[in-house]
Image 1 (cartoon, rainbow over the protein chains, first blue to last red):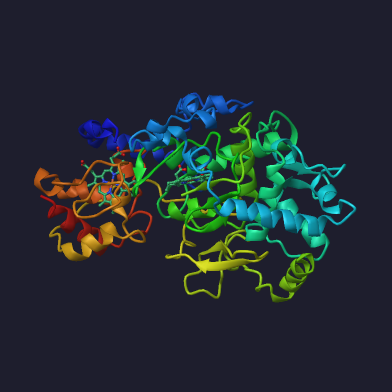
Image 2 (cartoon, rainbow over the protein chains, first blue to last red):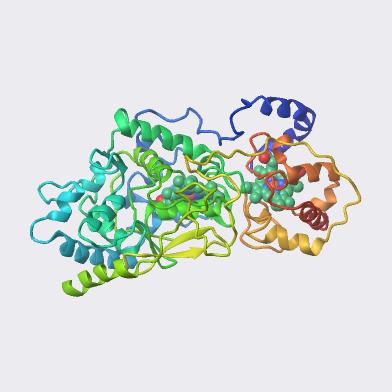
Length: 302
Length: 179
């Protein structure tokens, strides 16, 4: 808890002013609020090391996580909660089962002519680097920015199969495709074109306050980072996308957009469908904030 | 093995649940199931399936603005309110509201004696009743704290139609008992 409460009396006296300032919003625009961005804002060419909590040195190298920090109730959040990934959990967890399932589904859909791999963007059938460097991207054929799970759904549908974005099998395939990028640094270019536009929209959405609690993603992951909400410590949103889809130990293989629906609900906001434009834009934003952080699947977290 | 997988995939098209469609008044990309009593839905990934099981959320959230670009709604501006006594609150009901996730959920951010899994985002409310804070101040804080703290993370419970007038009074009666 910060010491804002000490300014209580000044604020009570100044409250008339606050109302006057807030009341000056443009009359024809609906009134909305934004959670403040991290100090200094965001770079137009983000990199994972720019993390606003300055905790990056503690989670830069997954193999070198400090066990004491991981075990510390007060400092655990500074390890960016990657402690559930190896080396802290190399047991046979649900993520591994998903990887196997994904491999089977892939072989089935890919046939002997690499049709599924080609549809996903691997012209030579080689999945290497697809997850790390190719997604999300602007798909000219579909005329929109797509993520990996949307393309898995799309390419499966071309063969008459249902692999809904957010379903177990879709995520299992996504884990399988991502496993071919394991250890490769994520890199997408948001400095130009459609991805730049999506990055900027995603940044705006991430800080827009919504829902019954008037909360933005940024309220929890920026303003309240390091604090506890109902017992759970809040972490930075830098380096967040490298290990998705992930196996949640409450027994659910979860895609990134399904995590967004969960975070929305936790903050009292009506969630959107997986693949909805604002979620795709937020994914572009978060992926750029993971630039140069290596892909790591299969992963597990609480 | 291969054969069965493909059959399962093909069969799943036939058994696919009806597409979720939004209420006419709601953006098309929100996750609601009109046939649920609580319309707000969430996607549960059933193991080894290409389909999603839509589950109902604990509370209908459709009345508040979403992240959808089609959503043109706004929120009420910060509103100053005047407290009218007497309090007439029920402290027992107040405790229930303050500790329930779907209602006040004050414990998400505040330490409240007797409740577990509390949060650290706001000041502890332990002993709050003994502090003698004016009722008008506590009422304003729960109704709309933005008037006093423009950038606050605490939700405007009254202004956003989260808690009713009576529920706010119940919660006030409850935190008054924290001594």
